Length: 262
Image 1 (spheres, rainbow, N blue to C red):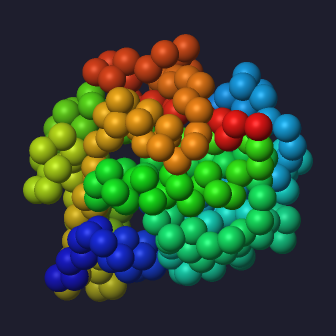
Image 2 (tube, helix red, strand yellow):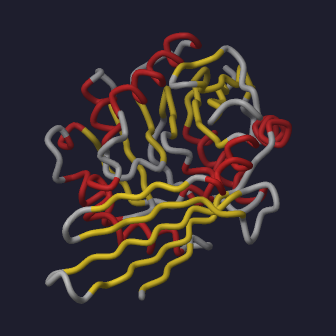
């Protein structure tokens, strides 16, 4: 059995290890819909230009769609193997792909919009790491630029331990389930057990534990202010639709919108 936990820099190791199967495992994700939600928020709050930074870009599903929508996209991820999968996709030639840690963003240029899809910030372990990520993003934004990022709500983390998804096929059996956090009393964990076989007799087990942190709205707003970003709004996601305000108990996730003054 192989076991990996998403602690510290092992987030890279985890995603490197699943990069080749990630698009298959997440094939039900509606990236067209997700990107449309972000384009809606960008349109509502306004961005001065088309230079877009996609943080935690994974295999490039969203980044390529943003490029197709007319943005000049730089996509960042901590996993070289995830970006290798992105590079092989049609349309990836329109996207600049960069391996980087969200907590230590390099000088990537200047952007009019920055986004996260899929809540990459919940892998950050504490306020110090979130502050480092926000400070790095702020340094890359042009005056007046927009930053839209998603986070899991308190209700998501509370309900997550009861979630179980099972997928079964002839040569693969996967169980995905939530669990109580072993580290953050307000967070949650995400367990993947994948069993594969070549002959139908001998099975291999692959196990991962992803550790998710919870960041309360008041903490997020305080950290944004500390790094020089102005909080504009926090929208919710309920039954696949954006709401004007986020309900920390009812909604699945929140979309935080901030602006670089200027």
